Length: 422
Image 1 (cartoon, rainbow, N blue to C red):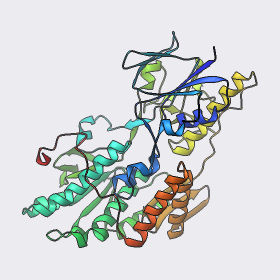
Image 2 (image 1 turned 180 degrees about the vertical axis):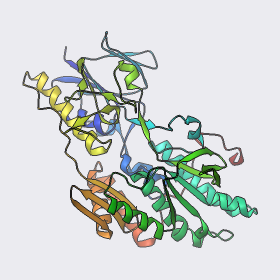
Image 3 (image 1 turned 120 degrees about the horizontal axis):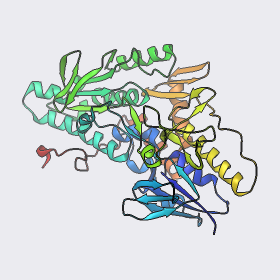
Image 4 (image 1 turned 90 degrees about the horizontal axis):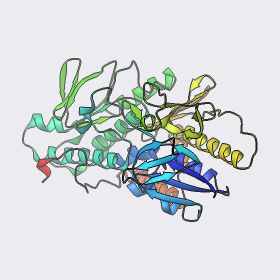
């Protein structure tokens, strides 16, 4: 019987592991609860009407159609029986493994305020993105309908909580949509009066970047009409708005970009985890007490060079490559590769049209040139010529015409019922 490798999760780390095992003498089973691989760094562009869902997601089966050694299963994992070496699916089916790779990503963390999710969705999946897009576009449409000026202003208030790259990128495009793209399309509503808020509990935005780039980003957002509020935690959040410093800010669209926590993998494995729920692994990315189980990506607490490895796509892909090399070494009876070392690829964030920030060690770039470099880098990492072409054409169309191409309201609400839509 061939060696059985089971990979849970078809994100960057899981898919890279499968790709790295091409040609290995093993049978691979890839399990995911969705049928597509998602390029999460551009997910916010789906939420803000720049890109269509098909531009940043690809069917897993299509990606692996030529890999006869890979079986893809659409299923939800409910647990892992480490004694029997089996993965347990929600259907009750058990999938046996000799080597297990867990790369199930992260979900939103509301720091004990889980009830906020219905009114302040996060951004991790295509469903999240289309939900946010729907709410944002409906807010403009309802503002056009209402005769109540206070309600109109609440509908035209967009609050993004959390000022990491996702939050910054979201408010930049929302502000451009409201202040530059939509004004000519509405008759009763002046969308230029929209209030776009970026709210951060910490002292500055983009805390992973240098202070000078953080200040540049804050200034660039302010010039685009974004109200940047740092040092102001949100204490309450519901469908009417948010409470900051004891005062209610009426807002009908709130987006959560403030934190994430790992999936339930620590519970499946009975493993030690950090405060964010990430499984603590060895420097070979395996459980300290079970080298047959790898934990990768946002699911794992990984140290490299005495520092935490960030939960970003390049780190996940590097971990997937390392896991594949380790498994290959074992199958071929060769010494294990050196412990995992993360190669930092730099920090990138776009602020809006013709503005971005890039930091790589002591090298820093900002402004329009950084914006072009940011775009080229993201196109390069997309999968397939079709996606690169379509995204490039979409961005070129937006740049030349000033019109976002995916402003469609096409689905029902995914987090709560909106009776006014029925």
